[in-house]
Image 1 (cartoon, helix red, strand yellow):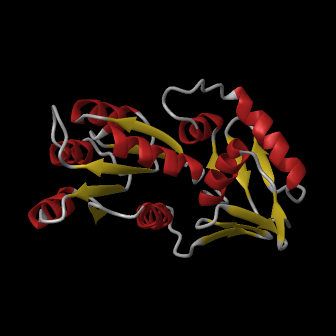
Image 2 (tube, helix red, strand yellow):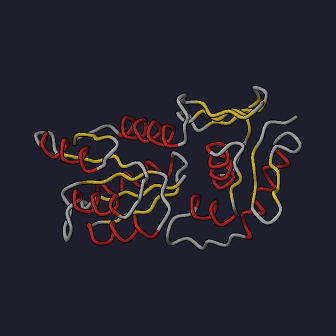
Image 3 (cartoon, helix red, strand yellow):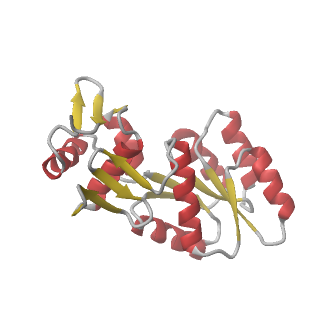
Length: 220
């Protein structure tokens, strides 16, 4: 899953990015509203962390422009403790949740997990498909109760397929959601990761849909 962090305070931005990357996400960042608006319009994100007090273009304006352009990714806004009016304005502009500074990283991650689950039609912290279970809180995967050891990229591919269980996902879509903006997005490497996952999962769980992509489904 791929996130965008928009925060103009360099230390906090770096902390957010490190924490989210350690949790298994691909993370892009922007330090001003102009760059954030461009990334949010042109790139595919599963969720956004958006500070409202940004240089060049304020966060509320960025959010309004995204929504006006039809961008529907979940947005978690960050606000100062006393600025209740900003929280109201952010929700009215299309934000999905808010978090007051200062905050705990664990709470921010929990809120993001909830936003991503809801966007994918999931209610529980565990994503499952047949014998395959992924706990979004611990980023651990089990098959028939046995732990599965995955590389970071294998985990990202599997997590995205689980969020789209029984749906066809193209290689280009996978590339957009598991790599950050400045990464070398070679969609051919997706085949390598899928091939490795197939060796670790029950037979035929990842189906190749010729000319379209891949579909994760429970074994027959």
